[in-house]
Image (tube, rainbow over all chains, first blue to last red; front, side):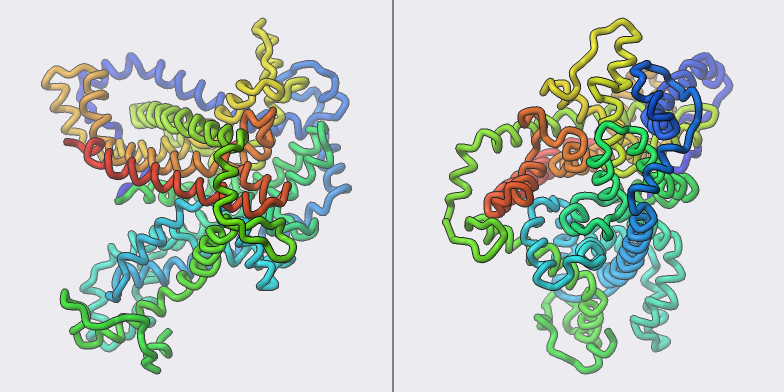
Length: 290
Length: 314
């Protein structure tokens, strides 16, 4: 399996090559620095605006750093909006979705990888094909369905439709298929049932996969927008992205408040992403296996 | 799950297959277990994807505002599409967005991946920076775009002014607004392309590059005739993923421009949303959705058929 770990350079270092490479190294370094600065600038700018006072933002001057760091934007946002409720909603929904998603994907992954039954390949391909269905295609009937099931107005209106993904099942199957069949056959001969094998052999051997599935799902759910926009129409149920859009609508050109809240809403995922980068990277890179 | 197997309920359809499986002892039981393990996925996907998909097909033949029963109107919605200028504009924008963003994000991703795959200090740090935008939500990304491209107070025009360049009307000029959507998307998506290419590059056997060097290939020739062909599978995968993404681009457009000015940035998904939940012409919204799905299936299918072999090393 291919993963994107920052390891070896493309060519072995032989003395001659290294000397020639070194001549260009400063150029490459400069390039990398410039690209990084360009990519970081929008995030930096969000932070600057979030910590700048209103009067400074409306002064019309272009300055690349704040004159005085102030927390007034954060205070204003916390006073006027149910920020804590929104954070709670996001945490609850993202956690439940991720746990459900990992469970559903692992069960399906084991079935697709190691159990023989009619229609297995067709069902697997259908699951992968659901990746190509834009939400907007099914948005209206899904909304009606969720309403008729009595889920509208609760977290479940978001959780259930987003918990199972073809992507998760795909990822799980690709990993679980790498668990040697002999191991499973041996357990079968010892009289273990599939549930037992799943719990005692497959799950313990799949720890890295569990982390990948969990973090991918968490990221996806935390940042999800289109469906929660439709399904959560009550201010007190909003997740952070929906709350952010609502808040921006209320604040208008008060970018200080909007950016303060934007910063709060992205910070948890950015930190998790940097700390557990390995798993996110594997999640994205593994999608590349055929 | 085991209880299902034990009670021995009739399997949906599992007669013995001539090619194996079926006649093994315990095959029937294994099949039942298989369906049991799959059940949560099938129930969720069936309920929340397959059923609504059929619903969308049915809705596309109705006129309804979402309150009460709709009226069946046959192909009326489809005929309406043909003469709806906004629909064609949305189609054009979707295609334009796709054909710009797909190659651009792949080229940038490849460039970054080659850079990060070379000898470079602090490579891990640079990689973290490049993929960082992937952790930021689409809404926050688009709102940073709103902030940066505000044509009265935005820093983009501020920087242009500071450099003595003419400012751009990012919000009121259609082409500039479209460009801002593309730029924000590239900021957001390049990291993903880079990651896939980086994984591909690290899978290339170093000896192959060495052999090409010994044969007298220069850096550009090595890149063009060894590295790029070896990255074929990554490129193939990225084309598919970028096209799928581009057909579904919603967050950025919805928040950054709302489809404006004058539909200059309206894409099929935002137009479908507007019809479904703003104008509440829900039958028409479903029709747009069905067409969108057919087009994206066609596009992906064609790409799959025609280019599968060409992209692999041949």
